[in-house]
Every structure is written in C-alpha cells, then in structure tokens.
Image 1 (cartoon, rainbow, N blue to C red):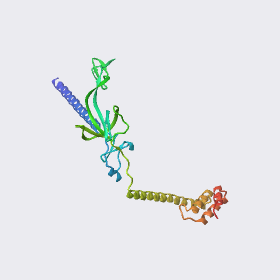
Image 2 (spheres, rainbow, N blue to C red):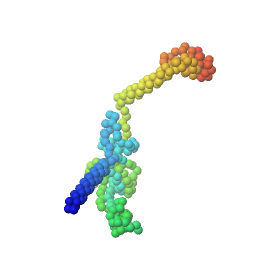
Image 3 (spheres, rainbow, N blue to C red):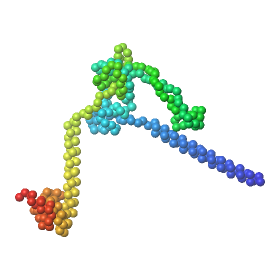
Image 4 (cartoon, helix red, strand yellow):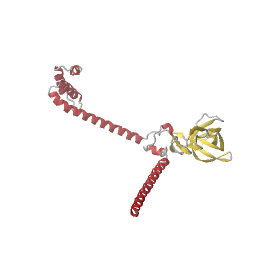
Length: 291
C-alpha cells in the first residue's frame, strides 16, 4: 500500500513539473510578443531624409510619397513639411505683421473634462477595451467641456504666407530655427520655409538627358527592327507555300525595309503574287505605288 502511494506521489510530482514548464514557456512567449509589439510601435513614422538642394541638383531622389507642394526649403535644406517631425502644427493668434515675418501669440492649452457617464450594462471591475470599469458599470471617457491655458508666448514666424490680419487665429506648420531679440525680449524664431522650386538643369545634365534619350530611341529601334526581322523570316516560307496574306505582308516589308534591306523589285513581286490570288490589300498597295 505504501509503495502504491509513493508511486502516485511521484506521478503527481511529474505532472506538476510539466505544468510548471508549460507556464514558464507561455510566459516567455508572451514576453517576446509584447517586446516585438513595443519595438514596432516605437519605430518612427513619417520621417524622411533631408537632402540639400545641391544634392537634388546632382540627381538625389527624395524617398517620400508626397506632392511637390509639401516640399519646402529652410536655410538651404529641403524638408517635407507634412511628414518631417521637425515641423510642428501650431494654432496661434496673429499679433502683428512685419515685412520679415509674423508675430504670433501661441497659447498652449489642456482640455477640461466633464463628469464621466455610466452605461447600464453591468460588467466586472477592471479594464474593458480601453475603458475604465468601476463598481460593476462601464465608465466611458469623460467629455471635453473646454480648455485652460497653461502657457503663453510670442513667436516670430518667417516666410509666412501673405494676406493675414492681426487678431486672426491660424493653424500652420513650421519648424523652430533658433531665437531672436524682439522688442528687448528673447523669443523663439520659427520658419514655414519657402516652396521648393526645382533648379534649372545644367548644360551637363541636359547633355546627359539627351544622350539617354537617344540611347533609349536606338534601343527601341533595334528592338523593333529585330521584331520585323523575325517576321520576315516567318513570312518567307509561308509566302513560298502560296499564302496570299503572307505574300502581301512580305512584299510590304521589302518595299519599306521593315526587318530587311529595302528591295523594291522583290516587294512588287510578292505584292503581285498576292494580288493575283485576290488579296485586296496587296492590290491597293500596288495601285498607290509611285512609278
């Protein structure tokens, strides 16, 4: 009896060990999945390289799927104002308009939340799909009922669009380029950038583009000629065997030098052979031949 109990205890201990190993393995896998998700989430998005205008003139390409309207130059460097993280979205009030920039009053605000609403559906306490659950009722996110100002400062924005008036509240994108002294006060200096205008091609670039175009035309002509040559090789036995359509087509190839050397005599010969068999197109081509 004692031996039997001992065997049962050993089997039970082995089962417990296996379950513990499974739990440790599951925890490890969950940790790997969570870490992978965090790394993917942490990757920056919308960031592009910032080539200079000189690099663009040398043929560098901007690796961003955006229209040219998003490209601006700030201090001789090119940026994508919509995707670059250096550019911030700013909502501010126009203070004054100057020839070299626009003075804004930028107030940073935070939301004021109202009372939270409860639903009639009862669930257990905890967290349910991102919403807080307390006291057996699902509590929705609190509504925003207003905003309070937490800071206010003046900024000078360069290269801002024209046609703005004092007192307007505008939303725009700009990047901070430094600080400046304004009315005996140090304020932040921001820049919206100037629209990017591609520089005119240099004579060397024009020559290279022309050479590439001529080379492409030559390759296309060679490819077309090779195709016509293959057609002539295929048509010759068909025409010899009496095919009227092949004879008319082969005659047209010889007349115009398509895939072969131009040979008027052979062209007329094969066109007449096709016309004698009632080929209308061959007869029409013979009629329009110049003497």
